[in-house]
Image (cartoon, rainbow, N blue to C red; front, side):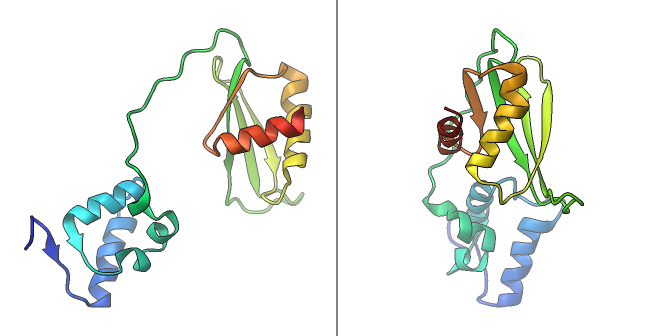
Amino acid sequence: MNKNRICVPDVDSIKKLILSEAHDTAYSIHPGSTKMYHDLKERERWREYVAVCDTCRRVKAEHQRPAGLLQPLKIPEWKWEEISMDFIVGLPRTQKGYNSIWVVIDRLTKVAHFIPVNTTYSGARLAELYISGIVCLHGVPKRIISDRGSRFTSRLRERVA
């Protein structure tokens, strides 16, 4: 033992069992790959850990800065002044070929629009849907919040402008 850490033998089956327990069980510590990585790093140690864990390898959690404190968003003054948007992906394909839902929510009233989309849609196609489904009904919002990041929202704004 070294600083309250457990030494894990270099045995693939044991490593896979630990990863499975961390990722797949009801009691897993996998609320997010960065947190999961740091939680596991506190408990187990072995070489090439990130190379074994597909999620951690893709996220490269060891290179990310820890998340800061959450900052509350101000409540908008007017309906449809601020919207949030996200995509629900991984759905079965419909008869019309949709496999995702684009969710656009007014932050003040919590009214939501659910727009069927396909993951292959271009930014131009999403902009068309945004204008016809949101802007025509509610006007142009002052602020768009998306976990897709500012690059996504700025590209959408470019297409709309």
